[in-house]
Length: 117
Image (cartoon, rainbow, N blue to C red):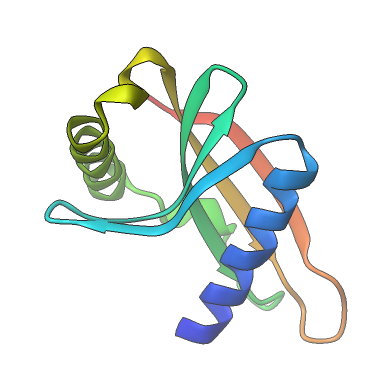
């Protein structure tokens, strides 16, 4: 499952680059935890949670980003901003990339911009 998630994260990075965003970090880890992708969308610093599921999942991938997970992501974002003062000049946004990836076909990627505050 871990490798599957990592494949999803790589797909998400490619997707964001194609959309014109600059990926600053993948799997950013700090004392507060970890976030899948930190990217720059013009003048907006974007913290991205990637959720990948196989097609047989009955629930949408993004449904697993609950209140605790959002709190965790915000804490990691604060830590990143504290450690990278130059990044504080940007607005921030929290996105979710939802990937449904059936075994025998290409991934279906949905980018939920500003998925939560």
